[in-house]
Amino acid sequence: MIYSVYITSRSGSLLYQKDFKTVNSPITRQKSNDYLVIASSLHGVHAIASKITPPDAVHNHERSKLLANSNRTGLREIATAQFKIFINQTVTGVKIILFVSRDVDETRFALMYDKIYQYYCDYVLKNPFYELEMPIRCHLFDEQLNSVVAASNV
Amino acid sequence: MSKQIKQLGEDIWKTKVDKVNSELFTLTYGSIVAQLCRDFNYNYEEVNAQTFRMGYNIGVRLIDEFLQKTQLPRCSNFRDMAEVVSKVGFKIFLNIVPTVTNWSADVSTFSLVLTENPLADFVELPDDGKATKELWYSNILCGVLRGALEMVQLDCEIAFVSDVLRGDETTEMRVRLVQVLKDEIPAGDQ
Image (cartoon, rainbow over the protein chains, first blue to last red):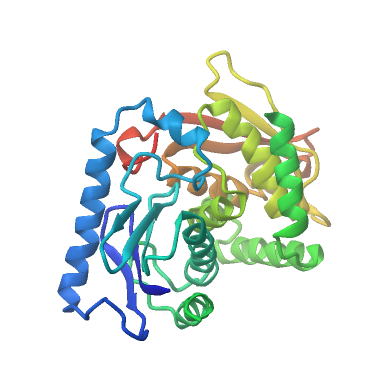
């Protein structure tokens, strides 16, 4: 189950946030300002995690078969008793953050992430009237995202 | 390494890329350049600047699609990057593989020689004595590459040095690495 999707820019500002209605969702609605705070906090913790990781640790990452791309030493995952948060960062620095149910593991997250990244490229970046680094308001992207969420929330 | 990259480019071209009729593409680009020439009263320097800027705006967006489709991590050196640009980048977007050549001694500059150029099919430059000296017809490609590389923190200078349309023997783009923007590499990456 996907509960929420966040997309943040290279500088940590929130570009996109959406909560999805599901039965018994453990995620409560926040004020819009709080979403900005959540996004920038995650951005900060991600950077701290990366800062305190010794450089040699990167080689371990290369041996493991985790997601390719870019999040080698930053924060990847947070788990609570109710839900998990997965974070991945593209080489360009955009972060896609998913709040999901506890049964989602890294492999399933990778599939969801890849689809969402693809739709971000197609329906956000290829929209000639979307300006980079600005909040995403694209209907087509919303629709595609809904389809990804619907597929995972059956 | 080089072989794997070539294979990757071909696989993505075959399975993940939507294709359009190349004539549609060629004619669209041609009409844009021709219109720009008219709009700027055949001031070719300005036309070069405009096509470069258009390319730049495409490049800064296109790079994410490239990364999504290829799933490639950051390149560890400039030589690998040149290989990837030619064998994967040009391959998946234009179905051509320019030759990487003419490395400078300090490995900061190389040339991409375009043996074929889908932008320039059917094209003859205007016969006004000026176009063959001033206009870089395919300058949009320099812009695209410049924008795309900048988004992965490689500050490069890119320009054409020869073009078969001008009567040169080859079409050659020169790429020079100015600097790696280390401070801007996102946290969590190397």
